[in-house]
Length: 273
Ligand SMILES: O=C(O)c1cc(=O)[nH]c(=O)n1[C@@H]1O[C@H](COP(=O)(O)O)[C@@H](O)[C@H]1O
Image (spheres, rainbow, N blue to C red):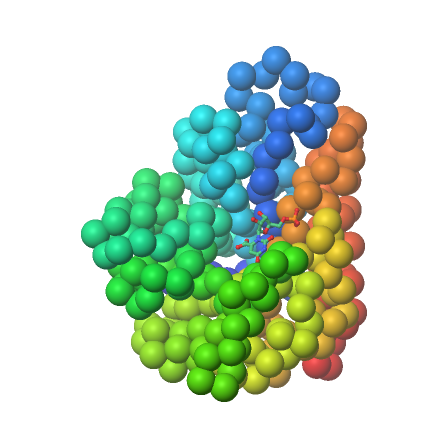
């Protein structure tokens, strides 16, 4: 199955547009993990097991593993998700982008070393920098378009040939770079107006939408402005609000409850969109 097929199946099977972000921060782990040499893996595995049936994807953030020297835990975690929850695709959040020869190695890293089904990439270096990712027709290529952070507009809003840069990214991806139908766009939940504008440009291209939960994005506005006409088209991603919903021994139950609450909140608004 391709990434897009697994995503569509997971949307339906789990009736969910929630992507669970895996951003381990050991300082926020429950006390029971203190002194556990494999705490990063054990914590993330517990979160994955508690949320898999309410999620359409998992999104491990590579810097949160690499900064801890925990690349091996990331590799084992992706393998664990594939083995134990095979219907839930894994998006590696690595925001890669470089000249072709280096990009080729980034693609091998994401898809072959880590076994990810999709990866986030930065389009700033242009099409050739993404070609090694785009060529992997069975994998998802998740391209930054209008990011969730406060400074997103510094460059992404600069007007070029009469429209903001992020709209050029959206149009190029939809019309030129998506030949294999394996592209997605990142549009932050914190920018509902831009979600609407990008949706109007790209048709059914799915959006990864970070920024609900800890960053304060409004779920109703995301669904209303971002869903496709069939009421899907979104991976609404939340990390800290799920992972650290409780710092106690009930952290996995609390993560499950937070994921279910987000799923149901999204679904309330998407019925009939
Ligand atoms: O590509 C991303 O995932 C991403 C894009 C973006 O525009 N904003 C954004 O917050 N992210 C990532 O999404 C996650 C958001 O985490 P929370 O704010 O805790 O839900 C982090 O891992 C970010 O690196």
